[in-house]
Image 1 (cartoon, rainbow, N blue to C red):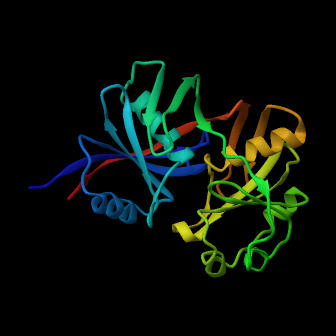
Image 2 (tube, one colour; image 1 turned 60 degrees about the vertical axis):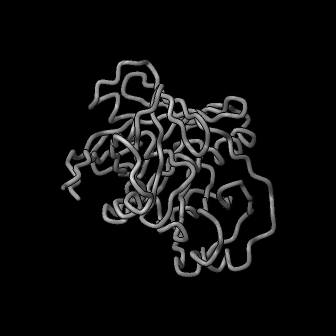
Image 3 (cartoon, helix red, strand yellow; image 1 turned 45 degrees about the vertical axis):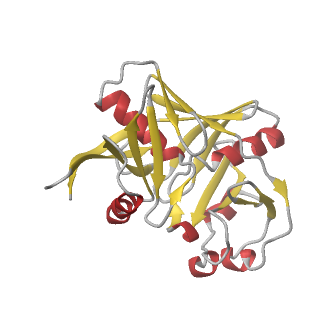
Length: 261
Protein backbone atom coordinates (compact mmCIF):
# COMPACT_ATOMS: atom_id res chain seq x y z
CA UNK A 1 0.00 0.00 0.00
CA UNK A 2 1.40 3.42 -0.98
CA UNK A 3 1.18 6.26 1.51
CA UNK A 4 0.90 9.77 0.04
CA UNK A 5 1.76 12.99 1.84
CA UNK A 6 1.28 16.47 0.35
CA UNK A 7 4.46 18.52 0.37
CA UNK A 8 5.05 22.21 -0.31
CA UNK A 9 8.31 24.11 -0.75
CA UNK A 10 8.20 27.74 0.32
CA UNK A 11 10.81 30.49 0.11
CA UNK A 12 10.58 32.26 3.48
CA UNK A 13 11.64 35.77 4.51
CA UNK A 14 11.51 36.98 0.93
CA UNK A 15 8.95 38.24 -1.58
CA UNK A 16 10.73 36.75 -4.61
CA UNK A 17 11.45 33.24 -5.75
CA UNK A 18 14.97 31.91 -5.21
CA UNK A 19 15.52 34.31 -2.31
CA UNK A 20 15.20 33.91 1.44
CA UNK A 21 15.32 30.42 2.94
CA UNK A 22 13.58 27.45 1.31
CA UNK A 23 11.63 25.20 3.67
CA UNK A 24 9.46 22.17 3.01
CA UNK A 25 6.10 21.70 4.71
CA UNK A 26 4.24 18.39 5.04
CA UNK A 27 0.63 18.09 6.22
CA UNK A 28 0.04 14.80 8.06
CA UNK A 29 -3.12 13.10 9.34
CA UNK A 30 -1.18 11.56 12.24
CA UNK A 31 2.40 11.11 13.37
CA UNK A 32 4.41 8.30 11.76
CA UNK A 33 7.55 6.90 13.36
CA UNK A 34 10.28 9.48 13.92
CA UNK A 35 12.48 7.49 11.54
CA UNK A 36 10.04 8.24 8.71
CA UNK A 37 10.12 11.97 9.47
CA UNK A 38 13.91 12.00 9.57
CA UNK A 39 14.14 10.01 6.33
CA UNK A 40 11.85 12.48 4.58
CA UNK A 41 13.97 15.39 5.86
CA UNK A 42 17.13 13.66 4.69
CA UNK A 43 15.64 12.87 1.27
CA UNK A 44 14.34 16.41 0.85
CA UNK A 45 17.76 17.79 1.86
CA UNK A 46 16.70 21.33 2.73
CA UNK A 47 17.86 23.12 5.85
CA UNK A 48 14.50 22.46 7.51
CA UNK A 49 11.20 20.70 6.96
CA UNK A 50 8.10 21.34 9.06
CA UNK A 51 5.60 18.57 9.75
CA UNK A 52 2.09 19.52 10.83
CA UNK A 53 -0.71 17.48 12.44
CA UNK A 54 -4.08 19.05 13.23
CA UNK A 55 -4.97 18.92 16.91
CA UNK A 56 -8.11 19.88 18.84
CA UNK A 57 -7.50 23.61 18.43
CA UNK A 58 -4.86 24.37 15.81
CA UNK A 59 -1.73 22.43 14.82
CA UNK A 60 1.19 20.56 16.31
CA UNK A 61 4.45 21.39 14.51
CA UNK A 62 7.82 19.62 14.45
CA UNK A 63 10.98 20.59 12.56
CA UNK A 64 13.76 18.42 11.16
CA UNK A 65 17.06 19.18 9.47
CA UNK A 66 18.57 16.43 7.29
CA UNK A 67 20.39 15.25 10.44
CA UNK A 68 18.31 15.99 13.57
CA UNK A 69 15.02 17.21 15.01
CA UNK A 70 15.27 20.76 16.39
CA UNK A 71 13.30 22.54 19.09
CA UNK A 72 12.57 25.74 17.17
CA UNK A 73 12.75 26.93 13.56
CA UNK A 74 11.59 30.32 12.34
CA UNK A 75 11.63 30.12 8.55
CA UNK A 76 9.91 26.71 8.43
CA UNK A 77 7.22 28.00 10.81
CA UNK A 78 6.68 30.99 8.56
CA UNK A 79 6.52 28.61 5.59
CA UNK A 80 3.96 26.42 7.36
CA UNK A 81 1.78 29.42 8.17
CA UNK A 82 2.05 30.57 4.54
CA UNK A 83 0.77 27.17 3.36
CA UNK A 84 -2.19 27.32 5.73
CA UNK A 85 -3.11 30.95 5.08
CA UNK A 86 -2.47 31.09 1.33
CA UNK A 87 -2.93 27.54 0.01
CA UNK A 88 -5.35 25.97 2.49
CA UNK A 89 -7.58 29.02 3.06
CA UNK A 90 -7.19 28.89 6.82
CA UNK A 91 -9.98 31.16 8.04
CA UNK A 92 -8.92 32.17 11.55
CA UNK A 93 -6.95 35.41 12.04
CA UNK A 94 -4.14 33.58 13.82
CA UNK A 95 -2.61 30.14 14.10
CA UNK A 96 -1.32 28.62 17.33
CA UNK A 97 1.32 25.94 16.78
CA UNK A 98 2.07 23.65 19.71
CA UNK A 99 5.75 22.75 19.70
CA UNK A 100 8.78 21.69 21.70
CA UNK A 101 9.24 25.42 22.43
CA UNK A 102 5.70 25.86 23.73
CA UNK A 103 2.75 27.55 21.99
CA UNK A 104 3.80 29.71 19.02
CA UNK A 105 1.30 32.30 17.76
CA UNK A 106 1.48 33.31 14.11
CA UNK A 107 -0.55 36.11 12.50
CA UNK A 108 -0.80 37.58 9.02
CA UNK A 109 -1.21 41.20 7.93
CA UNK A 110 -1.06 41.99 4.24
CA UNK A 111 1.85 40.10 2.72
CA UNK A 112 3.73 39.79 6.02
CA UNK A 113 3.52 36.89 8.45
CA UNK A 114 4.54 37.53 12.07
CA UNK A 115 5.97 34.88 14.37
CA UNK A 116 5.68 35.35 18.14
CA UNK A 117 8.68 33.47 19.59
CA UNK A 118 10.31 33.25 23.04
CA UNK A 119 13.36 35.40 23.74
CA UNK A 120 16.69 33.58 23.96
CA UNK A 121 18.95 36.14 25.66
CA UNK A 122 22.73 35.81 25.76
CA UNK A 123 25.45 36.41 28.28
CA UNK A 124 29.14 37.06 27.64
CA UNK A 125 31.56 34.17 27.87
CA UNK A 126 35.11 33.15 27.05
CA UNK A 127 35.69 31.79 23.54
CA UNK A 128 34.99 28.08 23.09
CA UNK A 129 38.26 26.28 22.29
CA UNK A 130 38.70 26.12 18.53
CA UNK A 131 35.89 28.58 17.75
CA UNK A 132 37.96 31.45 16.39
CA UNK A 133 40.17 29.06 14.45
CA UNK A 134 37.13 27.45 12.84
CA UNK A 135 35.58 30.80 11.90
CA UNK A 136 38.78 32.57 10.90
CA UNK A 137 37.70 35.68 12.83
CA UNK A 138 37.67 37.02 16.37
CA UNK A 139 35.03 38.99 18.23
CA UNK A 140 33.00 39.23 21.41
CA UNK A 141 31.50 35.84 22.31
CA UNK A 142 28.06 35.35 23.82
CA UNK A 143 26.19 32.22 24.88
CA UNK A 144 22.46 31.70 24.43
CA UNK A 145 20.38 28.70 25.41
CA UNK A 146 20.54 27.44 21.84
CA UNK A 147 23.44 29.06 19.97
CA UNK A 148 26.75 30.86 20.29
CA UNK A 149 26.89 34.45 19.02
CA UNK A 150 29.99 36.30 17.86
CA UNK A 151 29.77 40.10 17.54
CA UNK A 152 32.27 41.60 15.10
CA UNK A 153 33.10 45.18 14.16
CA UNK A 154 31.19 45.80 10.95
CA UNK A 155 29.10 44.38 8.10
CA UNK A 156 32.10 43.67 5.89
CA UNK A 157 33.54 41.37 8.55
CA UNK A 158 30.30 39.36 8.55
CA UNK A 159 30.28 39.13 4.77
CA UNK A 160 33.87 37.87 4.65
CA UNK A 161 33.54 34.99 7.14
CA UNK A 162 34.65 31.71 5.52
CA UNK A 163 34.44 28.98 8.17
CA UNK A 164 36.24 25.68 8.24
CA UNK A 165 33.02 23.66 8.54
CA UNK A 166 34.78 20.45 9.57
CA UNK A 167 36.34 22.20 12.56
CA UNK A 168 33.14 24.13 13.33
CA UNK A 169 31.12 20.89 13.39
CA UNK A 170 33.27 19.69 16.30
CA UNK A 171 31.91 22.44 18.57
CA UNK A 172 28.93 21.09 20.51
CA UNK A 173 26.30 23.71 19.81
CA UNK A 174 23.26 23.92 17.53
CA UNK A 175 24.68 26.85 15.60
CA UNK A 176 26.97 29.86 15.57
CA UNK A 177 25.69 33.37 14.78
CA UNK A 178 28.05 36.03 13.49
CA UNK A 179 26.61 39.55 13.66
CA UNK A 180 27.49 43.24 13.34
CA UNK A 181 25.80 46.62 12.90
CA UNK A 182 24.30 47.03 9.42
CA UNK A 183 24.72 49.82 6.92
CA UNK A 184 21.20 49.91 5.43
CA UNK A 185 19.56 47.99 8.32
CA UNK A 186 19.98 47.94 12.10
CA UNK A 187 22.00 44.72 12.15
CA UNK A 188 23.23 41.93 9.89
CA UNK A 189 24.06 38.32 10.58
CA UNK A 190 25.04 34.93 9.23
CA UNK A 191 24.30 31.53 10.77
CA UNK A 192 26.42 28.39 10.62
CA UNK A 193 25.27 25.00 11.93
CA UNK A 194 27.39 22.15 10.53
CA UNK A 195 26.89 20.12 13.74
CA UNK A 196 23.15 20.14 12.91
CA UNK A 197 23.67 19.16 9.28
CA UNK A 198 23.56 22.71 7.83
CA UNK A 199 26.83 24.42 6.90
CA UNK A 200 25.19 27.84 6.41
CA UNK A 201 21.49 28.49 6.90
CA UNK A 202 20.22 31.13 4.43
CA UNK A 203 17.81 32.87 6.84
CA UNK A 204 17.38 31.81 10.47
CA UNK A 205 14.28 33.12 12.20
CA UNK A 206 15.04 31.42 15.52
CA UNK A 207 18.50 33.05 15.69
CA UNK A 208 16.71 36.40 15.84
CA UNK A 209 15.32 35.38 19.23
CA UNK A 210 18.92 35.91 20.35
CA UNK A 211 19.88 38.75 18.02
CA UNK A 212 16.86 40.94 18.76
CA UNK A 213 17.28 41.38 22.54
CA UNK A 214 21.02 41.99 22.10
CA UNK A 215 20.64 44.66 19.40
CA UNK A 216 17.56 46.16 21.08
CA UNK A 217 19.60 46.83 24.20
CA UNK A 218 22.66 48.03 22.29
CA UNK A 219 20.74 50.33 19.91
CA UNK A 220 18.15 51.38 22.52
CA UNK A 221 15.15 50.58 20.32
CA UNK A 222 12.54 47.81 20.31
CA UNK A 223 11.79 47.66 16.58
CA UNK A 224 14.66 46.65 14.34
CA UNK A 225 15.32 45.86 10.70
CA UNK A 226 17.62 42.94 9.95
CA UNK A 227 19.35 41.37 6.97
CA UNK A 228 20.85 37.88 6.92
CA UNK A 229 23.82 37.97 4.58
CA UNK A 230 23.73 34.50 3.05
CA UNK A 231 23.99 34.13 -0.72
CA UNK A 232 20.16 34.08 -0.92
CA UNK A 233 19.69 36.90 1.64
CA UNK A 234 16.67 37.39 3.86
CA UNK A 235 14.92 40.46 5.23
CA UNK A 236 13.29 40.44 8.66
CA UNK A 237 11.54 42.94 10.87
CA UNK A 238 12.02 42.21 14.57
CA UNK A 239 10.25 43.63 17.61
CA UNK A 240 11.20 43.00 21.22
CA UNK A 241 8.05 42.69 23.34
CA UNK A 242 8.87 41.72 26.91
CA UNK A 243 10.07 38.13 26.92
CA UNK A 244 8.89 37.57 23.33
CA UNK A 245 10.30 38.45 19.93
CA UNK A 246 7.98 39.20 17.01
CA UNK A 247 9.65 38.32 13.73
CA UNK A 248 7.96 39.35 10.48
CA UNK A 249 8.62 38.56 6.85
CA UNK A 250 7.09 37.55 3.56
CA UNK A 251 6.96 34.15 1.85
CA UNK A 252 6.27 32.77 -1.62
CA UNK A 253 5.33 29.31 -2.91
CA UNK A 254 7.95 27.55 -5.05
CA UNK A 255 6.35 24.12 -5.57
CA UNK A 256 3.59 21.76 -4.50
CA UNK A 257 3.77 17.99 -4.80
CA UNK A 258 3.23 14.58 -3.25
CA UNK A 259 5.50 12.20 -1.39
CA UNK A 260 4.84 8.51 -2.15
CA UNK A 261 6.27 5.76 0.03
